Length: 295
Image (cartoon, rainbow, N blue to C red; front, side, top):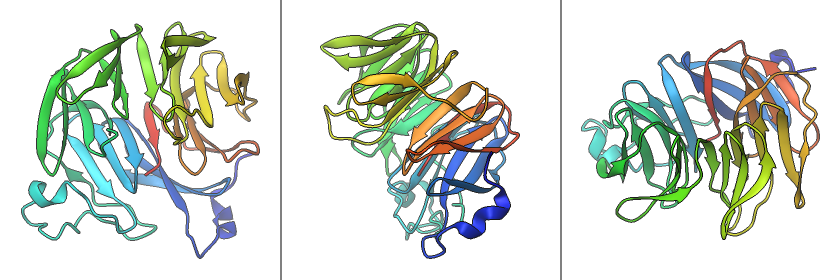
């Protein structure tokens, strides 16, 4: 059974809820979480969102109009000084704890995928296939890739495979029909014919039609907590092996992210959360989900 939104009273009041964001054709929705509990949820911004990524107190969202950025918990926004002439102190889109940010458009244009490069700069794929990287309003075009589907760290995935953003361009690093990627620790790629791990080339981890993958932040070369979703179910990496996860709902998981816990959203709009001891869920009723992200 999922946790009722009325049960938010059990949260640690000194810390406040941890926000997780779900994006899709409905816009950007916020879901409050605390430890393994799912609390209140609501629409933070109405738009047509295609992708989202969170890191270090920042959230970026790719939409059909532009890339948006918001900053949480008093963190400074490296994009403020040059993208908003009326925001010279860099504070206008910084939220107080527990509040949604005032999202700021970065002037990238209509985009289909977005993420944070290892350097902390934003990496985005425009609707026309152009891939850009930048900060402080200074964007560098790295090249073009058709049908970019996801970005994580310096990796991008597309129908034509997996790419890595280099110092001055893009390099194809293998595979085909790639749907999602996780760059944390050891890169993982979800494709139409399986889940792969990058070693000396791509190593087959699981067979199947995979659409989403995520792993917790880890040192390079170390793969920690990780999950991958296929049309057969959700799989978790425990030790050196992958095992199927027993979820409280029989719905396909279409989006994954890792933060303080593991977050998943199904095609029917059900939000799931685990901190390692089972899964709690909340029906959001949101269709057309594209991504889930924890700032």
